[in-house]
Length: 410
Ligand code: CTP
Image (tube, rainbow, N blue to C red):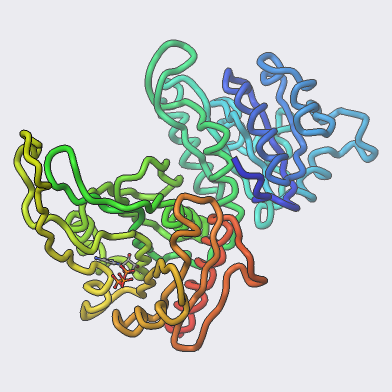
């Protein structure tokens, strides 16, 4: 786990209403503080039946507020003081009852009162519903959820799965790390709002027989980080992934493939509907000309079997040559002469942008350094040289892609 400060300088109100999922709110408070946010916790009376303010105070490092009548606030207006400072209010768990209160604009307790009193244009409201599946599915709750969305709130989840009551279905609160990812996305600038971004990532696996194949050491981390960063930037993201065990970034549509041929087959149908294509995948240049039906046996032979290879289609070059191609970004993993090789690829594949990195130095690692090469010149990321966390770099790259794309559109 890295210690990236994704919420540095952000001021948050973390609200807890009643529900077993309050135990997850303790971990969420810890993650928010670790990500650099200043967190004020507000708990309803029901929430205090599940977890104590002492725990939340220790984890947030600040006094917990439980009542609008708390005399500790000099002006006695906790609901105003809290929301005038906050960038966002996140209610986790959000009970069915609290959602009903908010949908109606009621102010029965400090938490619903401050949600009502917040300046809606600069203090985002995020709700993480948590309740029994029948309560979530009830038309009243669904009506309230729709009303809250229409009023500008973000509903995070709920997830599906086993519930505290023993039943299985929709209504579980998202996990703390998922809530953190959604919160960071909600608070990010949106230079790619309305865009669709198609991304390839990871290695491909070219089967020789049912148990063997040709592949490479690409981890997929950079492509997955770009998918997450593009979603944070407001894009609808389709991620075509080779065989990697990475979790899918929140809100990203993932299509799993194995071979280069499958990757091409997954990419092509999406080119007309996606305005940006980022090819980070380490696609095998060659595949076995024939797939052996059964495992190739040694059978006491002394001579190794020859594997005849045939060339794979270049996915990126194929997309870039379409009559109306998306804005295509290529990657160049090199071991030397980065700028020269990246520029050669830019010209050979007729791309507006190639991103170079030194392959052996970055495979499988969490940090990287990029060199952006386009018709105007070269640009290093991170700007000051050195390396940076892949997600941080992905965010910078996405901002650069958005800037170049906007310049073309005007
Ligand atoms: N790429 C692709 N389909 C392929 C091969 C490559 O889409 N069959 C994409 C990669 O995703 C990457 C870029 O093309 O964006 C880099 O291609 P690369 O394999 O490095 O370039 P080559 O043209 O094969 O050059 P070389 O092997 O000499 O480095």
